[in-house]
Amino acid sequence: MILVPSQKGAKTWLIAIGVTQILLHLLLVRRSQYPYLLPASSIFWAATAMQLYTQRHTLSLREHRATGGGLLLLAAVVYRGLHTFESDYFLRLYPLLVLVSLSLLASGLQGLAQYQGGLYLLGFFAMPWELLYLLDFTPWTTQFSTTLLRLMGFTVHQQGFTIALPGGAIEVYNGCSGVRSITQLLGLAWIYVILSAVQGRQKYLILLGAVLIGFFANGCRVALLAILSSQPDTLHYWHQGDGSLLFSLLAVLLLGLLLLSLPPHHGRSLS
Image 1 (spheres, helix red, strand yellow):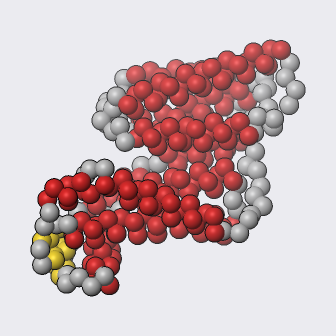
Image 2 (image 1 turned 135 degrees about the vertical axis):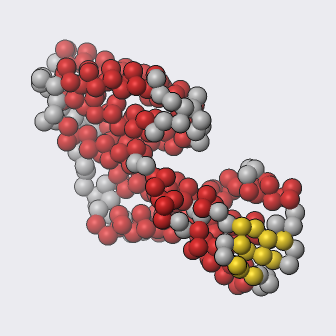
C-alpha cells in the first residue's frame, strides 16, 4: 500500500488514538473491582496490535462517509468508559467497540472486513464467559479429582461435592470447577489460532485441547487441596496464595506442548 502524505498523517492519528485508547482501557480495568482482567486485557490488546501490524501492507485507508459514525461511536465509548461502574461488563466490550470505531474511521463500512482478525480476537475477549458457570462442571471436577486420588493410592470417599480423606475433607464449589482455567487457556488457544491462521480440524483440535487441559490442571489442583485439607496453612497457600498460580503455569506449559506436537500447517491469512 502506497500512502499519499494526507494518508500518512491520517495513519499517524489513527495509531495515536489507538494507543491512547489502549492505555485508557488498561487504566480503567486496573481501577475496577476485577484487576485479574488486566493481564487478559493486555494480552488481547497486544495480540490485536500484532495482527494489525502483520497486515499493515494490505490494509487500505480510503475516503468514505462513515467518518462521522466512527467519531460518534468512539466518543460514546470513551464517555461510557469514563462513567463505568466498577463491576461493569462494559470493560470487556470496550476494546471491541474501539476497534470497530477506528476501523470505520480508517476504511468505512466497506473496509471493515479487513480487520476481521482483530475483531475476532477482541470479540472473544468481550464474550460473557461467566455464563459457563451455568453449565456447572462441579460434578465432573469432583468425580475426576476423586478418581485421580484413588489411582494415586489414597483412601478417599466422595459424597456429593465433598471429597473426604482420613485426615480431612474439602467441598468443591462451582467457582472451583475449572471454568476460569478453561477460559484462560481457550483465550490463549484462540489467539494462537487467529495469529497463525490455523484452519480445518487443527483449529478445533487446539480449542478442544485447551478445554481438556484446563479441566485436567484444575482437577489436579482440587486433588492436591484434598490431600492438604488437614493442613490449613499449606492449604491456603495452594488454594488462594501463590501456589495456585503454579497450576496455571502447568496448564500453559501443557498447552504449549500440545501446540509444539501438532504437524506444521499452511494457514491462510484472514486479511
